[in-house]
Image (cartoon, rainbow, N blue to C red; front, side, top):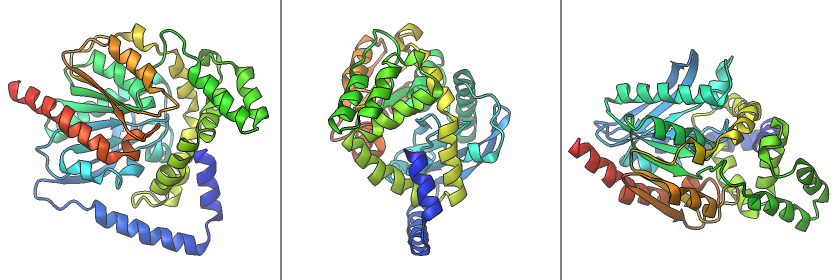
Length: 353
């Protein structure tokens, strides 16, 4: 849906709309300025995994804890949402990275190997880069949606690198199969009279491990478009954030949309990841903050996985009035959770180290 909507907007935008876009982008650029004495605002390409990958680092005080974000998708960069999460930068230094297949990294050129294992290796390299660049022994791993699949493996296997794990829109694959979310999509399509689309999903079946990349992409599109709340998130959050981002030119937006389409092959690969089989013991503080109305990854399933987690400290919280994309849809609520639950734990751990 994002790919189609962006392509249409870019190709059909009249001059007046483009002028309005420029005005909004300039205003957003002013809001993003960081001029505090100990702040940081830098962005550029860094060689990660043998290719140039885009990394942004922003924060008002380098003494603050570092949050390394792993974005969703796959291929859905978080750099578009910098203005939405600007208040976070008063309390944390935010590291945002366009994975291979995403955003400006995809627009840079050849992507090399596109696989789940390669993204895990890249994420480790980005983690080490952030620690060295910011002179931090450990960073908070903030993993969103698809990125939370990578995040679980990173946090479980490398607790020496991370002070805490925070999963948002936490994806839980594997374990006992749960077809409820899939069946809910089919019901919504039937209720809306979209019988052909519903039949396509029924022909695919609910077992995602048997889908092709194209079928995975079709399910993602229909799951989003059939949910009124997610449609509002697309219209009111995602599209405006991308369109008015001061850091993204039109060609960046096109590259980002193309990257999302190209990355579907990794999306279908991750359905074989079994969160339970991979391990439920973590040697670091563990948090899941889930949208209470998340229809792509229902909170009840995330909670079932959370209940099986063994960790020195763990907490689960619902984000009110939120579906998927909860952190950016409700950035104030999410920041409150970071400040009241995560930051004290990270600060306490750092002081005792």
